[in-house]
Image (cartoon, rainbow, N blue to C red; front, top):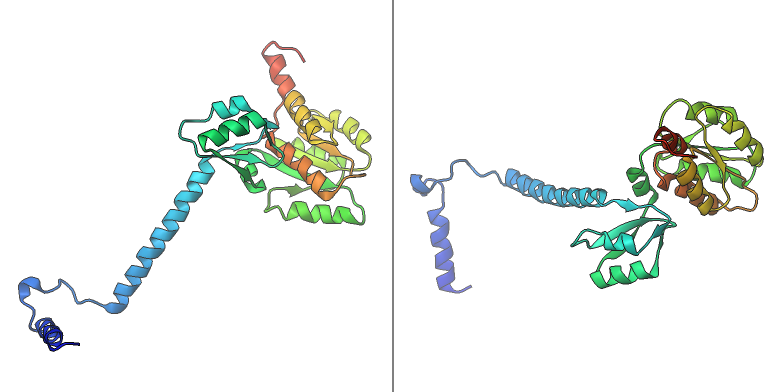
Length: 253
């Protein structure tokens, strides 16, 4: 350090020593270094969490496309300036739609199960018939989905009673006697049951029937495949009586 620098430092120190600062330039309060550090930390955390909250809000505001196909007409209907879209697992983006999205610089992002649930209103439950082996693993898989599913007693009567206790409910029943389960369920008022082996079956049942009960035979199916059927079911949104609405408006079934 040069002599000139040292002299300048000493002059500044003496000028800011207690009792030397002119009253007009004295701080309004005594500076507490601990408090100053605390305020600085709080400011940084507020900025960080504020940014995270804004990002989360933006993501939540971006709807998840949960239909079976995302086609060219859907891509053309995107708002100007859109930079990304979110699609549910199992949704197919057609080549023409993908080309248009690429030209516009729109990124396709895969939505998780929780995001699908957030955009699809309704209440959901599952029931897996009592059996040893991998079906227990299937039960655990449903229960580990962050509280997205209610677990019901594995019986047709319990499922029917739960569906009848509220509107907008949907249930998935896994049983080796699917035909009987569908027949018995459909005899109950307000229950619209359908048997499904493929996601396309679920899609047709929810679109044409407004199915609120999907029955699945586990034979020959993996946990991942059954979970895909469950995801397709939730993608359709809260079940509603499509046929009843059509009849009420003068349509035909």
